[in-house]
Image 1 (cartoon, rainbow over the protein chains, first blue to last red):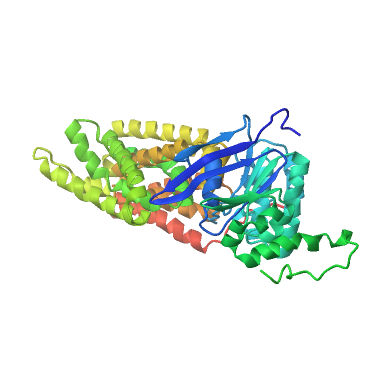
Image 2 (image 1 turned 180 degrees about the vertical axis):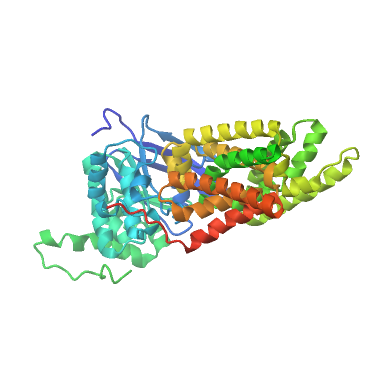
Length: 258
Length: 265
């Protein structure tokens, strides 16, 4: 672990409120991410997830409250979207190396890790949405971060690659000992590997380990009883390999229910 | 070759050293209309220059900055899109400039000169001014090149990586304003943005990296100035518009050329 003797969270938002125009986007939000922890931020559209991320990154200043960062915090950030315009002639390689110094070997190793080695010399404007997410992950990893902030890293990625990418992200924590803050819509994938779920609806409406959160009344208020019931029961179907009992039929098909 | 023609050639080609790379950022960031709006403040700047008795170019720079400041302030409050706001502010400045100049009874301004430029009247002092602006622009751009590229790709990503996004953006606005202030002398406020964006837009088809695109834009700009001036001399065309027409021909030619791929195996 490169976090060394530091104790306490890598990053901590305290009572953060953000107003954009006339609207209160965030109200008294508390959030912290520790080293080696995967925290997933869930919430419906317009819940303020991206605003919270931008506040944590220091792009937006909170109107009230504070954001504290560990000294020497290095954040690797993967944005939800990246505007790519063919008018700017850059390759994936160039994108990854802008303003950064590292050897060819490291670049190759990281690209290998995220499964994007073959597109190194492709133009940024021509790679697919799924490939873009891999490249953005690589860009974040190349900074040797102790905190990874990934905003919807699985959006627009097909189901098969989603689980592959997700298990890859889970591996980063073990390999680099970094904390991971994940923003996601994809509840079913994310819930299984997350240490803590923070459910945002302008304020933090509930937070805790996935199993607890799925039974939280505030969570089912937000996502509907159907979703929370399904999530509460879902992890069991994942354990069936170790189950000596008869495996109950999965409550709802994983893929088909989306 | 006549002296005035030589000065026009040197001055015009000199300016393209700055307009080439700046123009690339303007097209990459899709802020061509912002440039046009900035250029519309020129007359207001000229009026301010007479009022404060300062060099017109300096006054134009100041108004460009005031314009950018107003825009930033209003952008958050006005219930209209940025595009509409720019349209309002651009024409407000143009109208304001014309009215302000009309009010100054003792001042007789060569309006046509400011609107359409007069490259053949470039003097020795202008050449020094161009040389200074170009030197500052090129130095600043090469110093901040990586950061400029980073904010061009994604400003949030750049901010997360610790790049001072606002400062870099301010630098770019300053350089764009400077280029407009000196470029207006040559092709006038109505055409100066053409000189910024057309060579850059034309350069894309012949470039495979951001750096080559900047250089190609310079080359296309310089050749356009040369050919434009030459045709102006041969066929007695207005010089500024002739230059812009030649640059546009490069753009059109680029459209039919195959896209340069950036693959390397």
